[in-house]
Length: 191
Image (cartoon, rainbow, N blue to C red; front, side, top):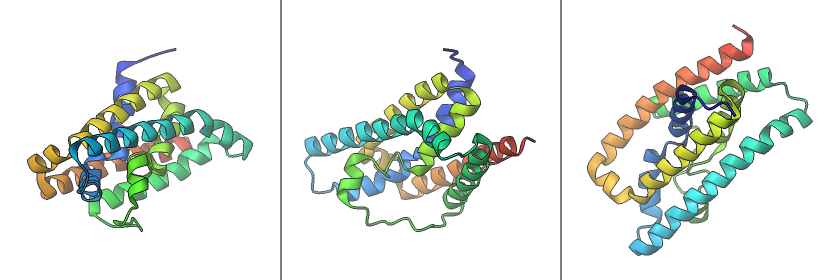
């Protein structure tokens, strides 16, 4: 198990950006507005736990699934990089590629796609191939924990940052994510 602090940091930044817990704050607050503080805390806990289970499940099962389907890692890197680039464009420019604001409460509570959506699952697989599985496992655990804490403190986060602050964070995250996407495409092409 080769753990490397720079690799963990790189993986953490990428996974955390894709999870984008700050953009989930207003959705979480609106869907739990009638909850008591204790029930909102429980909802955040369930969302964080299920998001982590989905992320780790795909991290460990995803490569075998790709292999079974006959998909080479290079193809997955190129395709995944293109999808990640589209997600980054969505973040950076505020373009909505079919995201629904009417997410059912059940989806919010279980953390899919609130935290661990397709982009996060894809990112873990791509990173495991480039920086190592052990580093991605640690980075994923840190990202899930940080995301859970942000969702848990959603009322305070929204008060401090506000709607415009959340929007700015999402745009900056989009630019950083675009750089990761281009790197995956470049590596998939062997450049």
